Length: 192
Ligand code: GRF
Image (cartoon, rainbow, N blue to C red):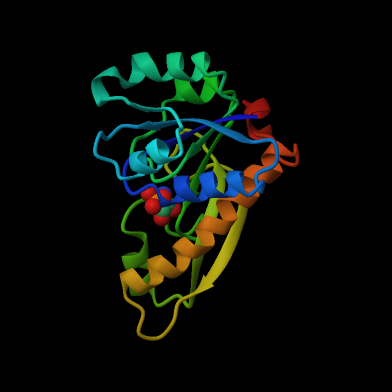
């Protein structure tokens, strides 16, 4: 199964997927390309290091080029990993729903930005991470899998986010493997 990973910045989830593939942990999933909408995204360095072809698309050329790239590389699953751009309905339809995202909260709680700050303010004792299919909303698509992480006394945003990130790095490869194994499909598309 051919994968494209889309990032905008740090790229630690991208790196964890690459590492998982090297260890044979994502089944037949094969990371073919990295796409960034930000030329200075740190994650690009890891693509270079691992000889994974990468492409930077500016906002201007995004709509016209993204489908061409996905077609050219015969991409079957798009993994959003810290990708800070809304996915258009056209792209979702082009991929027939085969787009997943990772989000650092227990969706449907705390979608959107500034997640950890809002979790801490809520005093909720748990947070976590979620991988979900991407639909036309922001962090609203059907949930595939989640991991729960406790919020501890003395947590600040940095401590909580790094505890959650460790779980993200295990959750994303495990979900990608299950999708590649055929355990999950974007069934919600058929209802439209
Ligand atoms: C992660 O917390 C991810 O859940 C969210 O954005 C962050 C990206 O981190 N969507 P990285 O770029 O993968 O390091």
